[in-house]
Image (cartoon, rainbow, N blue to C red):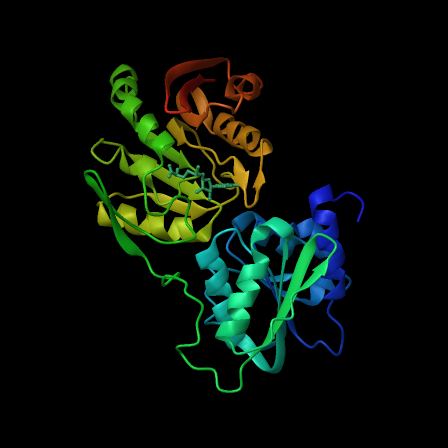
Length: 352
Ligand SMILES: C[S@@+](CC[C@H](N)C(=O)[O-])C[C@H]1O[C@@H](n2cnc3c(N)ncnc32)[C@H](O)[C@@H]1O
């Protein structure tokens, strides 16, 4: 398992136990940012599985490695049945419950669903509830610092036999101060406006006043689209929004349409397929990748913003106060000005 981060090494060992074999039949893996593709690919026969993921970067990576991959918001409606389904549980409980509910329905009569997770991920209580819901014995095992549990499809599976998932797949209306939007579990901060993003929008009227013209705006890591929506009254020619999470892109598209905005809204890994330059780039970069805190993402977002900038571009970033944005930005921007520091967040203006 050399080359894998230490925290993933035990998990990678557990995955080996679930390597597809002739007896295990056709295999489906549910993959999000908590199952590193590098770990998955150490499993013998990994290229023969089918994967479902809600992340663009994972889908692109798996496809490049020859794995048949479906990119969707864990909507299994187009899939057949599987003898083995493997799921390294996600961070958000409603998503975990949704995936388990869906996976159980996708099992063939002799099929088996395996869920795995590390000690802190809450797997033990999830497995206990699932065993109760499906009327099965809880068989959770501890393997190093990971846990593994398995389930079969109950003989008479009823529609009521579901772990609570708060209608995971459905968009719903949320109201925050003067803004109404559609969102759902699985999207970053789905039922609120992020305080950092809200602070970023307070500087926009000033930015707009001193920039001569703003004819193109990019919302980089758009979530359900809040930052772009903050420009909804502006006369802008080209709007583009992008996120790695397919659930976010779907919610953002709905919100832009509902607010009458024409936005090219695409799933992508840090805008890697987006060409052109933007007058204004808005960004609240992630600092978590699933269960892990990640500093490398900040740099990746800065590099993308720099690539999509021209000399007159202004990129407005908001970060938690402990993220050393100035330090990272030095490599990509000639000036990094602190505009606002409040409630533990910092809003910066970056100039190429
Ligand atoms: C802190 S949230 C901000 C969301 C939104 N802009 C807002 O203000 O509510 C960061 C967003 O970046 C997205 N993201 C994470 N990794 C990404 C990547 N590699 N490429 C594009 N977006 C990514 C996440 O899905 C999340 O929606």
